[in-house]
Length: 123
Image (cartoon, rainbow, N blue to C red; front, side, top):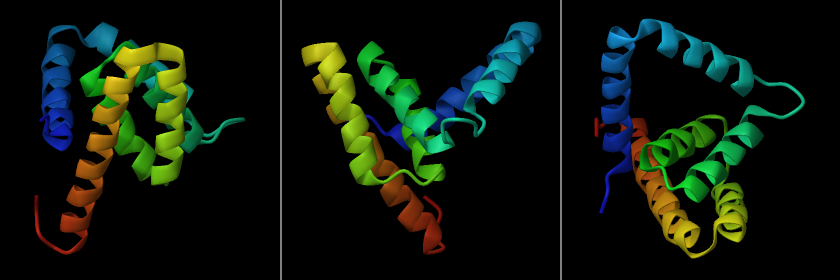
């Protein structure tokens, strides 16, 4: 089984390495990310749930890790994540169902990691 908190941390390191090699492209992507994830007509939670649904449908493990983490950061509930995953399964069929299960597993891991950090123990 994948460890999604570790996968997210590793992805951040890999992106930092790529940013050093191609700062112009990664700076532009960062600006796009910032512009599209800010609060607007849609809340940040809603935007992260949309991103999670797309991540499940396109089967991107690192994207699942990033968007489960950020959805929780912005206050998404377990029920909201489950519904977003359900919509992704509707749109993506059987493969999305398998990645939906992965996303729900990621949710449990991030919740457990947050509980450990809240209790003063580093994960």
